[in-house]
Structure formats: C-alpha cells, structure tokens
Length: 279
Image 1 (cartoon, rainbow, N blue to C red):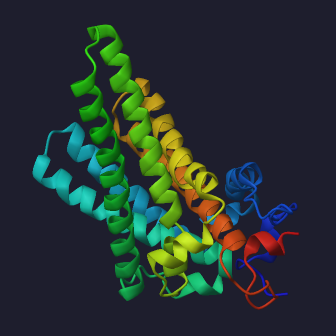
Image 2: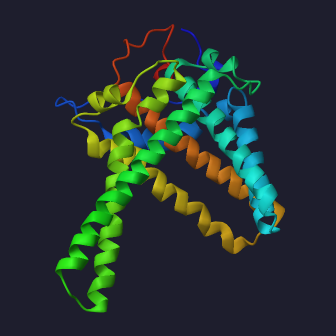
C-alpha cells in the first residue's frame, strides 16, 4: 500500500474514513472530529510533506502582524498579500495530501506558483464575493422593508439589527457552503463550475454551511484569546502557528466533505489519502 507520507509509520493509530448516512446526509460531527484529529494522526506530515506551505504561511502571518503592531500600513498590505499566497499554497497542499496522498504534494513542495494556485485563488475570491454579496443584500432588503413599515423603540431596533446581522451571516454561510466544494476540486485539477457544486451539495446545504462557514468563523475567534499574552515577537509567532493549525483543520474538514459528496472513484492503494491508509 502506497504510504501517505514519507514515513508510513508516522500516522500511528487509526482513523476511520467518514461514511455517509443511509439517507445521503453528510456526517458533520464525524467530519469535524476527524479534522481536529488530523494534526495528531498525521503530525509528521506537518514537518515533512506539508512543512514548506506551513512555514511560508506562518512566516507571512508573522510579517503581517508585525507590520500591524508597528503601524506600517504599506508593508502591512504586502504582508496581507503574502499571507493570501501562503494560504493558497497551504490549502492546495492540504487538499491534495488528504485526498491523494504525499506524492501529490511533492510537486508543489518548492512553493512554485502555477495555474492550479491561480484558479484556486480565483475561486476563493469569487465564492467569498458572492457569499458576502448575498449576506449583505438579503438582510439589507429585510431591514429596509422592516424600517419603512414599523416604528419601534430604540432598544428593540438594536435587537432587530443584531438578528438581521445573524441572518446575513447565515445567508453568507449557506451560499459559501453550496459552492465550497469547488475549492478541493480545483486543488485536484478538476475544472468544475458552480452548477456542479450546487448539484453535489444538494440535500446537504446547511451541513456544508456548518463545515465551510460556521466552523471557520468560530475557529477564527479562538486565536484572539491569546492577545492577553502581549504583542511580542514570540507571541505573534505562536499566534501564527495556532491560526495556521486551525486553518488546516478547516481545510481538512472541507476535504473530507468533498470526499463524501463529490463523484470521485473509490479509494484504491494508488489514489487513497493518508486518512484511509491509517485504518
């Protein structure tokens, strides 16, 4: 059986591949649980197969944070651009590692930018824009109608704004979830479209919203709890490591969702990823 990383014994322990329920429902809890286990089950991959995407992303995050702390807006923009590029490398590498194994990552181990990364970035921006537009448009229409028809006290109006804001996030997460399968598909060099993504996520729209929208939102808030430690260089590097690990969890969760919903062939010793090989 072809190993998922350079050292096949590094996976240690067992991890079951998530299976769809009889009704075709995405097993969200199991997928999220296995995504959180990934850094532990495949921990050596973070230092071997995935080391350069991880290092590049942490370095870019550290640079962006340092430029922000020391109030360097011009350089901070550069740091954000580098962080975006690092995220693309990391996401593509993780998707390919989880779904195809280490051999599919070695070719991008030197951080060479290709049309694969360009297409991936394009879909990230397009999906993000469409989700944000829908998340803004629907609540804006509701708020406009509500404010023109009703006259309420200021306190109730504040609660209405909060509820409408939550509705906007729900709409954005729903739209993002319906299209999110395009990201792992693009990482695997598949040329799919929005219609394909909507078709594959049909019946699991809100489950995909949880995996691709709610989970990243919640995890993005957790590193902020570390700011009480100060803004020194060591703290910023640690914050970058934690943030990147959470990004990996999110990416792996989306990869496992793709494996469940996309019309991929059955896993074989030639194309299976490391999570299958751990069983």
